[in-house]
Image (cartoon, rainbow, N blue to C red; front, side):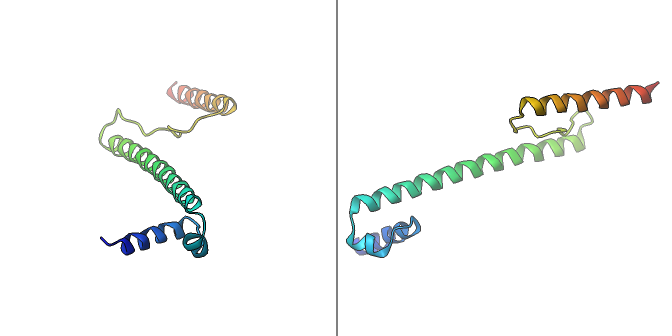
Length: 108
């Protein structure tokens, strides 16, 4: 690869990172590199978050399929990966208790 080609590639990355053409060609090189590194860090964080979301979705799909083929496997009533607050945990417990009491009434 030629130096001109590599420079063009770097220019494209710098532009995506928000570096103006003027700054890229005539500005401080260390500032440009800092912006490019920040941009790459941001992209990695976005990819990591998206990967975690897709992994979580896969767990839900797996549980859904398992619940279709195995009567002992249940799909979760609530989100698995959500970090519930104390207030939400209390409300969830109340709902669970109400459901248990309803089942007990119907079984008599």
